[in-house]
Amino acid sequence: MQEERGAQDDEKDHKRHSGQERRRRHRSQSRSQERRYRRRSRSPERKDRRSLSRDKFRERSVDESRDRRRRHREQSHDNKSSRTKDAEEVEINSRTAQSLVRHRGPLTSQDDSFAISKGEEPTKPVEKPNFGNTGTLAAASNAVIQADGTTVALKYHEPPEARKPSARESWKLFVFKGPEIIDTIELSLRSCWLIGRDMAVVDLPAEHPSISKQHAVIQFRYTEKRNEYGDKIGRVKPYLIDLESANGTCLNKKKVPDSRYLELRDKDMIQFGSSTREYVLMLAPKE
Image 1 (cartoon, rainbow, N blue to C red):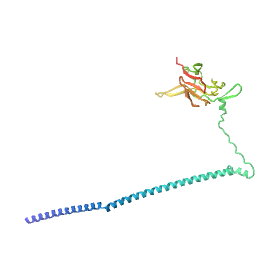
Image 2: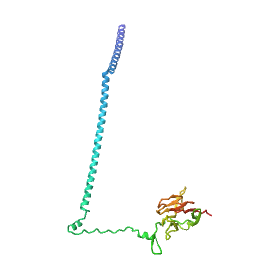
Image 3: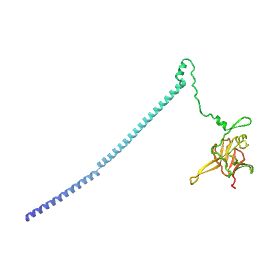
Image 4: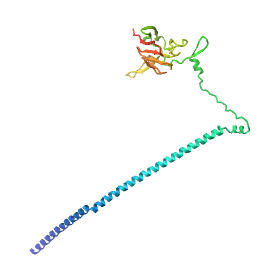
């Protein structure tokens, strides 16, 4: 029994020593490999190879980018040349058509060409009926016939929303010449007031030579707006419109645009042309 135990112990010692020897050899091999790798990495040949590979990569990337730019230029040049060819063809076709029209004249129908070949004059095209508005009826309805029989066409007619002011609102126009009031006009008597030099058609005559025959209009219009609750509230307000006069109209010393309604308010001042008279609009207080 003792001999068997001794044999087993010897076998275990042999295995342990053999395992330690294997581990030692493995460590030594790994160390030697690491040293060789370090020597190779520190060698100048290795560094040269690395730098060479980097230079080759850079050269290859530069070549590829150069090739891409070259292909892009070629493609853009091809597109431009194709567009130029199309434009030249269109221009050539248009020139050919113009030369044909210039030398041969306008194209004729088959009947006209047959008549020309026989020495006859071509027939003129029959004019088709035109059912459009001529404007004669509108001009007649918006005109004034004077005592001598002449007709004066009005430059202005009232819009559909024209309304006469209510009796509760009394609008007045005071005419100033310097510091003095020379006239007072009750604007609430009618819905439209035409101002100008043509005594036959105007409602408010102005004799200054810089004022046109039909210069401007003061028009009362009915307008609606919604309040904060959504309810519609209608009111008649005065507006000023210049009828494209030669010397213009000023509202509060500022020239107004032509053919455009501008709302008038209490104490506004109006001037027509180069006249020194001032027309001040006033709303009388409610009783």
